[in-house]
Amino acid sequence: MNAESDARDEAAAPAAPAPATGDVTRDVTPDVTEGVTKDDAKAERELGSRAPGFIKASRALHLSWQVGVFVVGLAVVVAGIIMLPLPGPGWLVIFGGMAIWATEFVWAQLVLRWTRRKVTEAAQKALDPKVRRRNIILTVVGLVIIAVLVGIYVWKFGIAMPWKIRE
Image (cartoon, rainbow, N blue to C red; front, side, top):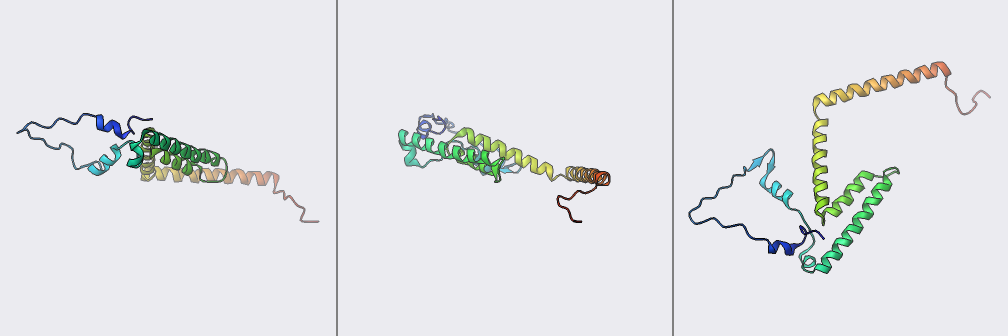
C-alpha cells in the first residue's frame, strides 16, 4: 500500500512552523505562471488516494479497495492491449485503465501527468505552421511517388482482373 495514499499518515506529519509574531510572510508564487493558475498547480500537486473517507478509515477496507481498483484497471488495460492489433480504440482504452488506476495509485497519476504533458506538447508542435507545411509537403511528395510507381506497374504489366470479362 502506498504511504502517500494513506490518509492516516497525513495526520502524523508535523505541521509547518507558524511565523513568529511580527514576522511578515508573503506569497512569492505569482498568480499565473506560464498559463498555469494557482488552483491548477494545487490540483496538479494533489497525489494519492481518492477513495471515500469511510474507506480510508479502515486499513483492511482501504487495502481491499485498492486491490479492487487494481483488478478493474488491469482488466481495462489488458482489453486495450488486446484491441491494439484488433479493431477497437486500443490506446484510448489503455489510457482509460490508467485513469482508473490513477484514482488510487500515485505512480499511475504521475504516468498520466507525463502523458498529458507530452500529448499537449505534441499537439502544440503539430499546430506550428512550419511543421504543418513540412508535413503537407512530405505527404504530397509521398503520394506523387506512389502514383508514379503504380503508373509504371500498370504500364509494364497492365491490370489483371481476377475474372474473365471477355468470355
